[in-house]
Image 1: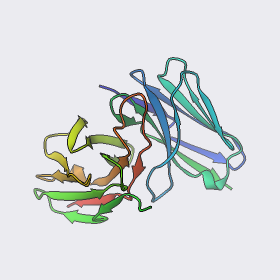
Image 2: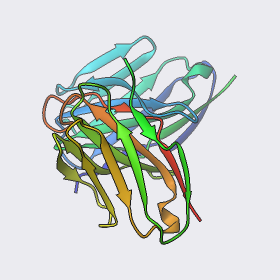
Image 3: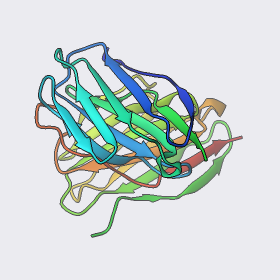
Length: 108
Length: 117
């Protein structure tokens, strides 16, 4: 069945450093969505990528969708303490399947 | 507009009991999906309902079931509870079916924290 893997599971950075999380699907996706879950909170939608090779930016966050539509990445430039949380990718085929998430810890 | 509402927020049950969780989606949303979240396992897909029909089901045993009503509200039922069922159960609503090319943003509720003792 459809599987979505995400690496790393955990990343600890110093404030100001960059951060990247990677998402890989076992099947070709129709679209990929990224969510952020703050500690004690619920996942909140960040962005959706639909086209092969698509790149989208939101301030310090850059999202990419692979050419084969099977992988994606989220890159945060110059992390801040407000970036703390777990980042999930959700791969859509006939349903939305999430990766295991990457927990980002930012040390001031 | 009101967000996704899940009730109850917290629940403690004994092994062998059954439990029903409720989810009221955002007004106008017709799709409701359920996920189980445990540490290290991420968000595991349980099932999705759209227009009162189960569209997809994850790899969970038959003890996990759900339904959706005509007003799009959804319930999830777990029978014969096991210790391993302890988790945060999240419901997400979308305008339409989350599968397919278009893809619709999922709005999550705060979740129901189920503890089985």
